[in-house]
Length: 337
Image (cartoon, rainbow, N blue to C red; front, side, top):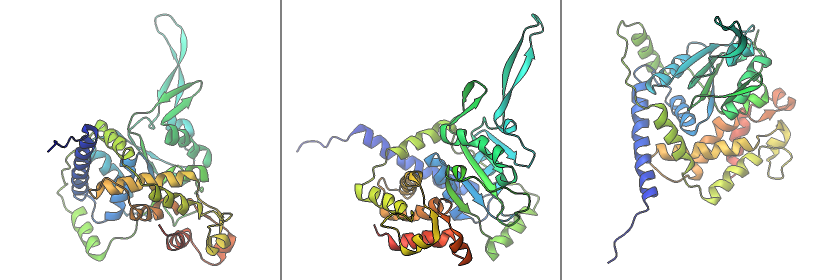
């Protein structure tokens, strides 16, 4: 009998997938030392990281959104920067600026670029809707192209580069809505809910105790980039890809496949970036469950965090108390794999 010859690249990817799965379990364990509960939030945050995407965390104050992101950066051994978005924050405060410097020996003057906090691996944009759109737009190029243009020069950002933003859904005074172009650059809209009774009891006990948990570092920048490249190599069957595209196209009221609910309550549906993120998120979900192929269930599981902030409801929806979440649920129900 002839010996079975394994494709070295396939074998290596399977080993990498196993290593990624084990690393994910370790990351969850380390994060849980400081963050109680919020299992789905942690899973989505790690999914977006492995996919190379950015996430928007929305929840009332006191739910550890900021602590979760800083904890993630700590256990990943990544460079971390936090920017508190305020009404007087300027774009240059984020990206950096050219400053005039004088050579003390020759007296010559020249401009030198001083990098802003955006030059990091993990950027926490805290309460991002506190700053006007002009300042929010400072993140657009970095989130899409991983670059920053200042003056006549374009600067590369460190890799991996991830933006995690927080937003308070209750207090609207002194806030500015995020432009649709920026919302679309966030892979996930992650809703952070209140903890359960048992979880809240644990939170109060742990946070009022004198002992501080010690976190171990699990992954570094190079390993995260390797995992992000591995995600891109996960195969997707044509029917699964078709399902992701049909799901997104059905969110557009002008499409023939749109449901009556979408046609009645949606002004604008999701764009092609939503289809891309559905597939990328599905790939990560498959890997984190120990599989090397994407299923329709993976796409369906990604639909809520990918689509809810990309579907723009109209006035009729507001009057009828129909939310974007309701519309996504309708899409999942109507569009079958």
